[in-house]
Picture: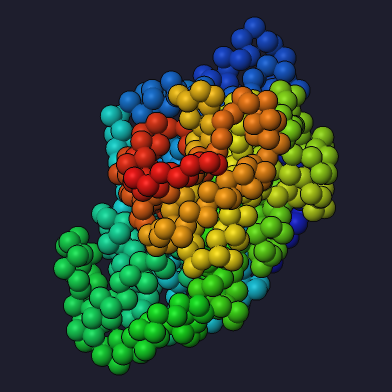
Length: 571
């Protein structure tokens, strides 16, 4: 299908979005009506399977409702439990707030493949319209980590969705490999830290070929550029001598890189040193990669906090493009105006990607209604939790994302991503209010110190009386005594933590805010622990609202200072 035909198909689907949604749902019901999960809800019903009967008999669900069926599939049960199609593998979710990621089944669904193809090809076409391909400057420095593949008890492979093309002998694999500057041995490496180093090494060796830098999420690029700042001398040494650092212990990856470097390259190494040795990293990307035109990654939601730092590295001459709203479960919405700032980014819902419903969300009470609406029922200006029915065995499934409808593209809703949905009604703190408050703290820190907040997360300490909110913050450098001024800002920070928090503080249901400062590098250890527990490095999103005790205890080990409204403890 030509690029023009793909974009016309996308345009037509949004023009008749409501009708396309009904057709999408009917296709799913006709195809998977015999699946055990779906059929169990229609026992005793002899009427037609359609949108009305589906919404009447099939309840809203969450991942917990699928744990049993997914475990059965993982153990090798080949009955049509969730879908009549054969199971290919499982996709890991991003696994941000649990010790182990969720497993999403990926079935060999023809209509599912067609929908996915349209979404991804339309996305690529939109980028090509902004940046037409160049024959000789066409490589991507793509921070991908596709080596983490496990097997279930039943012998079913599990991996990140973004890793699947590299473990599937298809045309898409060849196309992706031809785009990436890094050899396949790096993509399939066994250690994410070593892979990141080798990605940088490959990109620097052939810097004049790099057209763009990509990663699924902004957080992944920030980790890579931090590594560049700390390891540039060793990278230069490797390029200078045509060898690889002894820190790279993955033999297959190491051998591939030695061959890739093509011997000593002292001129290239000297050029990189000249840009890095001054310690000025603002706008450094265009200096290191002179043909670089754009950076592409998701910068909305919790990723918005990294945008300013990415812009700092990129400078004014390199464009930052936002990503799409795609999940491990399905494609949800596409970014039609990719050059917008994160706060102005809007996504157009994809009418053929899945069937979508929306649960009205009351931000003041931090709770969702049980009455779902479809495309025709959403209202501009209101917030909703997204519910999806997919071609691959999920039915009225809560994605856990809150979006705000800001308009319509033709007849398809345009939404902005707001935050992850609260886990329970009336939660003290939401992800959005925490991010807003921390941006306020960042501004205050910039005004008085040279310290940056690298990362943060929060949890509610239920063991204290009354309960109170704890915010972990990681500074860019070790705190000095002058940082006691944080104590002055605790009260000011509390005013930014949202209406529910303020009401509960006023009623004394919540105690004074606590800020726990952790030593530099603490959140990277959190990332490493998550990857070791199965979370895909490609899709890892640092958690903001912590609910898992293991994660909380890990961060507590790194606390070096605790600040309350009226006290200061140095550990």
